[in-house]
Image (tube, rainbow, N blue to C red; front, side, top):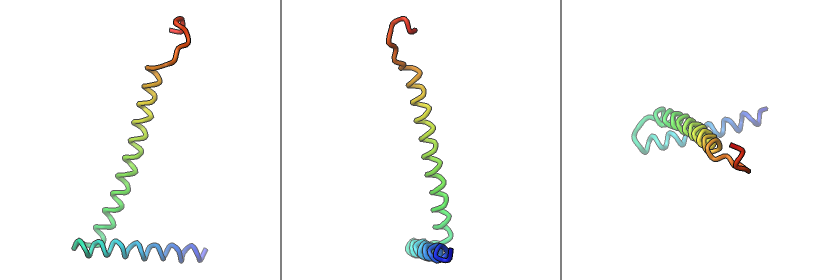
Amino acid sequence: MNVFYQLLYFFQKRGYAVCGRIAERLGIRARVVRTSFIYLTFVTLGFGFALYLFLAFWLRIKDLLYTKRTSVFDL
């Protein structure tokens, strides 16, 4: 378990350094950059889920409209 915490600490330290450097370059607070990344993550995940629901709905409608009939009497 100790290796896990060392790895977690390593990524947290390097990840915050990246946000800090971006904030320095843009001239804003690092906190703003971090929250922007968090909000952007939620927005993109929500967009992917909405796209999935839209495609599932579209395929369901397509299947209802274009059913393959083997005979004229299958109406």
